[in-house]
Image (cartoon, rainbow, N blue to C red; front, side, top):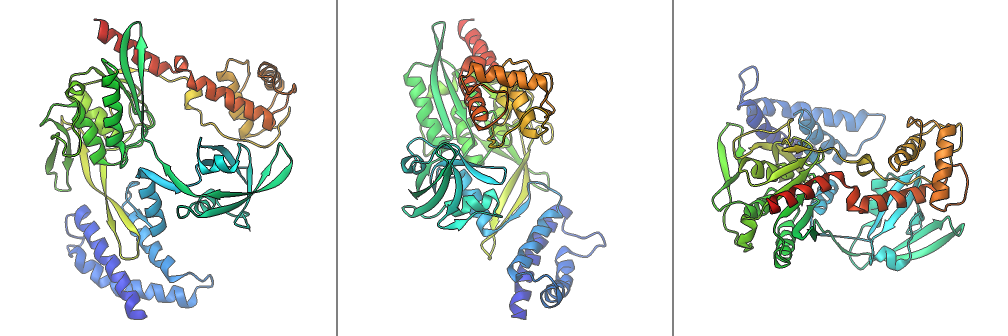
Length: 480
């Protein structure tokens, strides 16, 4: 047992040696080789493990100690994008970028210590089973959820395809508990949505990318083919809030817009050596040549990061598109993920990426050609509240409601979370306007109506200030 434990740490140390070789030029500060330093550390690592296992008043599972050591090695690098992922975390990360996942198809949030259904996806197992917004999940497969985190609850809900999930829910409208059976199914994850727009006789396509996942290039191909078939003459690409994803996916999207043999980015290794990433004819896709000549406007904001910035940087440097919105996030590193013997993964920043003009945007972002601030109602995170607030109360939920009411045009004198008389008057006026039971308190019915009103506001493209600026610019391009 002791020998096997030593080997585990030896493997960890060898992996760490690789990290130090990359970061510190193959040597430690006192001139010893990194491998020599780590070899000398084997006994003390094993010693610390034994002491903790044998003497610690708080018992810790051996596997958790190993994982703690792995996390520690990643953390000491000081890079927020280099991290250790446990087997379960690694699976979740892969799932987030996959084209589909198994589940029940419902958004869930934690509010006041309770787990609430925000909304079931249309046609999902959750909707088929009868789950409704504001249903509170009380038990899953007979087990109460007290003391669990939201992530724990989501883990319980996920499982194998075509397996049943027993749920006890409390429905406030009926003031009763219900027992529901939900079948887990494969839920497609769509990363591209598109529509044809027409303004004063000019047709153009609007295409939004929420991330760059496994199926993004295929979705992009289908969406752009359809827009071209519908006679779109220009393209608005929306990557606002897009956190990035796979480099290969953004490479295929960029490749459909740039000339063949164009460099869409550079990879720079620890030695400073540059490797050009070149647009090449795709073996998988044959994109319409009209895409390479079509006027392009790209919408970005502070939430556009990583692979999104690869796209915007390529379009900007090649003068292939006009960028509207805000300066992007500024993530200029690329992570390589290595599977470990315990099922976990080490995610490590191994390269910088540079724009075609060899600019490193890390910590700076890609600057918009035309700055445009978004309406505040589009940047506010919509959340649930099941509590009741009245004049004299003070809470973050009240501040949240004050901000939304002000964004909708109601006169609210403050947004610090204190429920004063002006807030009560605004709440009363909103409830009257939205035909909610007349009162001056914030309760579940108020928060439901507020959420629905804001969602309707957001769906109206006329309220999307940045999009309207982009539409105006595209119209200018097509008519000049």
